[in-house]
Amino acid sequence: MKPLIGITGRRDTSARLLRHGMHAVGETYTRAIHQMGGVPIILPPLTTPEDWPTLLERLDGLLLSGGEDIAPEHYRQADEPWLGSVDPERDASELGLVQQWLTTERPLLAICRGHQILNVARQGTLYQDIATYLPHALDHAYTPARMMEQAVHSVTLTSKSRLAEILGGVNFEVNSAHHQAVQQPGIGLVVTAYAPDGIIEALELSEHPFCVGVQWHPEAMLKVSETMSPLFAAFVSAAAR
Image 1 (cartoon, helix red, strand yellow):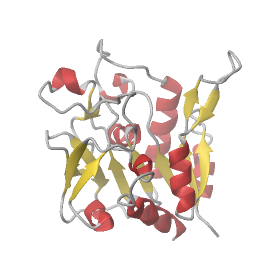
Image 2: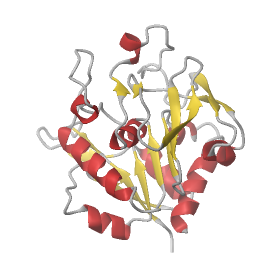
Image 3: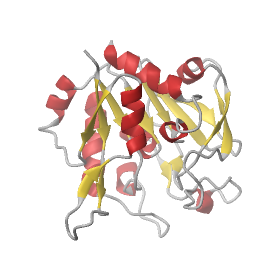
Image 4: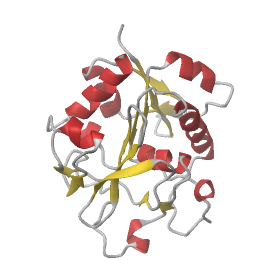
């Protein structure tokens, strides 16, 4: 049987009918999983502790998707003026689920916000705004005029990391759509990729069979390149086992 992959969703207010929100994920996530042989399932951002045992029992893999900022209270900081929108219900849902999920050996792939959620779930911290805290850093933020699949900067991977082994190299051009970034890595998390300006671009949880977080959006890059397809193939394969 094909592995069942849960993908964390977000609140969406773009519905045509007013006051009727939606829970959704980007199509690039679901297509990436389906293309590699997994069955994608959207997880609404409202699960509670009562729901997590069911998800742990039935899902074979967990993909943490991108989205809005994470409330700073979860990483021991006060809100700053440059903080973007947050969703308290989603924060609680994802942080609790991740903490429970990591007690198992089932694979986890974390992307953009998901990469940051993974770090916060392990008691790490974030820069609330890269441009404010690191004014000499590259411009990592999302730009509406730029296609999501467009490469923005390079990343250098640690040569002996799981990510380098999966992708078959250590130097890659990646896209970028974030204004926050990992500051202090969480407990057990190892930095396995950096941008040229020193921004942390990938994390792995040591001694876990498959727990990888990336700050860029590999699922969007599949539109124009097969460079990142091995990451999804390895993730789905791990879930199938």
